[in-house]
Image 1 (cartoon, rainbow, N blue to C red):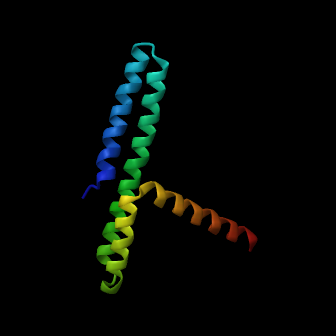
Image 2: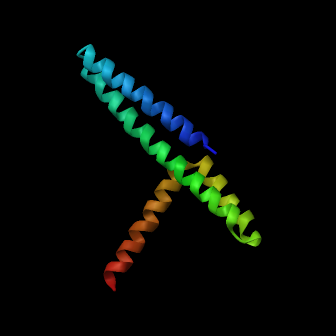
Length: 102
């Protein structure tokens, strides 16, 4: 099943490609750069959606007593993708720092 992030990400990426090519054809560097940025943003959003889809499948296989809390966490991630990404990045940095100290 595709999440909204996956669908929107793919659409943004395709739109960015079109913008970028149109900018190149019309010798409009601003449009070309904006298109490349939209392409990157769309690709990131699509990857995020795919990650959420993968986690959703894991939740379905989790023990029944863990499924409700896990679904609550996934719903938060769907509603707040930027905040979730920042939280995960922060935890990753903390874990990387803790690993270097050992």
